[in-house]
Amino acid sequence: MNDIASYWNYPLVTLSTGSQITVSQVILTILLIVVGLVLTWYLQRLVGRQLIKAKVDPNVAQTVQRIVFYGLLIVLFITTLGMLRIPVTALAFISGGVAIGIGFGAQAIINNLISGWILMSERPVRIGDFVEIDAHRGVVEEIGNRSTRIRRVDGVHLMVPNSQMLERVVVNWTLVDRNFRTTVRVGVVYGSPVRRVSELIMQATVEQPDTLQDPKPIVVFEDFGDNALIFEVFFWCHGGGERELRMIRSDIRYRIEQYLNDEGIVIAFPQRDVHLYAKTPIEVMARDA
Image: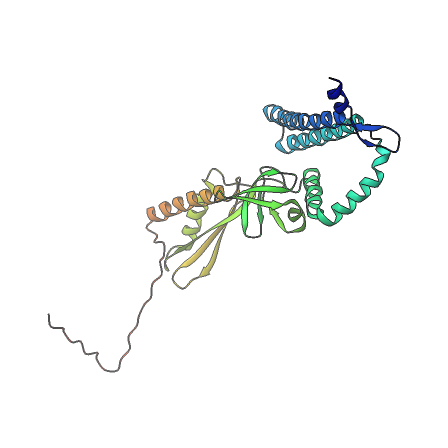
């Protein structure tokens, strides 16, 4: 027993203050760190789940969850120093070296970490927003410590570094509201009653439940096309992203096709009229079977 006690209390390091760090302190500190990290992870997850159950805004819930996580880490760090009997002032030299190391080796990580806090505080992008970055469109699912997770319209998940979300051009379709302006084009054959066509297109647009009446839809006689008279309707609608816009435009096209067909108005298709001019009759020869 005396041998075990001597090993247990064996001093490993003697600090400048005269205190010693023993084997027992190191072992207990390691156990404290492991248990503390597990509890910290569990508690911050528990807080997040409770906030979601209470129907708190997901952005607020994630911010509170992150504050709880880092707050518990700070408490764990101070407790660890206390167990090792290391004064906080003794970390001045170490912190300087760590800062230099971070500046050279972990600059991108720290940049993304700080950018994540900026995203959560200023909220230019929030969880549930429909955003567009470069050629990618999707819904923001999570703003993490290092990156933002976006679910594209095709279902693929895109991980974007937080710093890129601040430094690059990000189009947030739902930053202020979920109202979008979109258009539907249709071409009818030459000779169609243009005023009646405009009325039918307006009727099909207004009857769509997701179309907003303020601002009012506008039907424009766009152009005399090569094969058709081109009409375009501009309207605002309420939706959550590109999928909803496609469904709304599809429903309006169904209605337009039905109303034009009921009126006997033909939707144009590409065609060419060929005119033959010859001073002498064209000889037509029959082919033997």
